[in-house]
Image 1: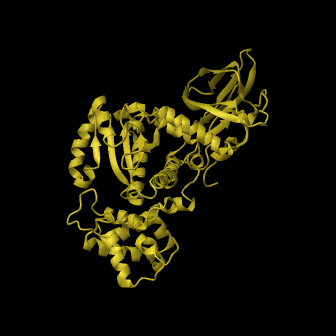
Image 2: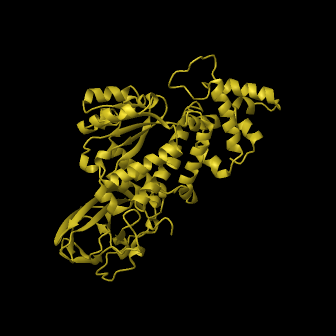
Image 3: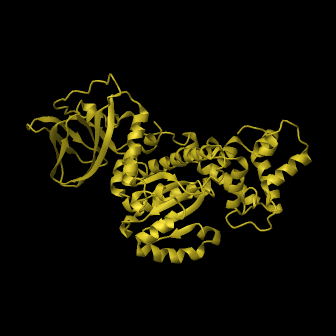
Length: 487
């Protein structure tokens, strides 16, 4: 985005850039107007208003002024406007997105870009967190398992389909695994890398015919209760929504809120009165009736592109997330000769003592981790079927400085760091004993592997070890990819 205004003008309009001839200003303006402004349409349809090809003369004048303004500003200003440059969003479509968000009022649009530039400044210094695991300070797969959110195929209009299930949001477990700050970091990743990638894939699949960089969102409220709308959930939703509306304007094509409980339906009836018609036209609320649900969804998305959860012919959301988890691990290609096949996590409330059993099948290997923010000690023993104690450690959180709920990261103990992996066939018993009567929350993570036959020389697995009783530095216990992002 370092082009000067003259070059940018050629980039902006394919009709101009396709020719090697040097066009006069008058010819350039004529070609520009014919490409961007209304083509024989007195009043464009609501869904086309403000888009390239459907601008009024007045909107076109503002469009030109905004274009010149953008290229006279700083690199950060331009990169804020062209947030989907890596996905090759056409310049005129990007400019019109921002102008539509502020009803083609130039001063308001420029003010909005400045505010978005300030909002994204911190994330920009980290390149918008290109690694999701590092952004979250925990495996992405663990996070989305406790708050399902995936890009699942595409709609009939070509837009990527995003599915979120806030009714499965497990705030207690998520806040033990990570923190609000890291969740927001991950949201920057999701918008700048994941969403951008899906947009570019659609552009390529349609040979450049996909131009409106928008998303169809399905918010599944099944199992949502008023108790889940706690302080943490509201804080996360509020900040993510603020980022989206300010930094990624006009990227919503359609919002389908499904399996809406009664309390939400009543809430929506009250809220929609305050929204403008253009916004409410994009939003549809559907109850729990299965037939009506599939009918509404299939009007926007082909049945083959819908998950079985909603009556479609696609794989279930749970299976889809597992598939993504396996593919993400394979993509890392760490060369350890193992193939990830499953992942389980369990939030354990330890008060006094409790036990858990893990059954590891033949030819399987389980890597075990414990994650906690509890500052009271908890003894953890791992015992095999012969009643032999394989490992015994003390688990507790080591707070750093004046961390609060927003920024506090947990302490993580990877048993592999102690030379212990669980090998099958075997049944292991995990014994946890709290040092105090205070309840201690610990998330136990099991990652199940098999030897990947495709890799001829897998690294030798770490041997079983006996009692590594001494605690290491709390933060060094975390695997390398789970240190703080700013370290």
